Amino acid sequence: MADFKDSLIFPAGERFDNENFSGEVWLKMLTGMPCPVANVTFAPACRNNWHTHRGGQILLVTAGRGYYQEWGKDARELRAGDVVEIPAEVKHWHGAAPDSWFSHIAMEIHPELGPATWLEPVSDEVYGKLK
Ligand code: MN
Image (tube, rainbow, N blue to C red; front, top):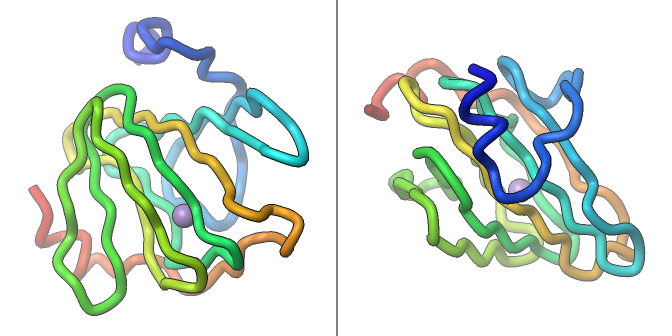
């Protein structure tokens, strides 16, 4: 839906074809090293695989409705204005709700430690419980 992407505070960027995301996602790098900040926009039902960040990550939700979930915990619903502080090496995923677009700013903590470690997709059993 072009209207959602055009309504964002920061540009949505280009379609991001990546095997670690299910569904359609758009990515715009807003800054580079040493403090890379990205605008990430998910189509409804799109989410990333389970993954970890070596130094952690901060998410600033700007639009839509989505979820953040840590391994072994309940998913947390996210809306514009929500902040997520993801500790280093904690297994998690983030993405859109089944029926809503979703956009967040993603900030890597200590990116010099290296890239994220990508793991398995979020199962339909896990994602299917979310509204
Ligand atoms: Mn993450």
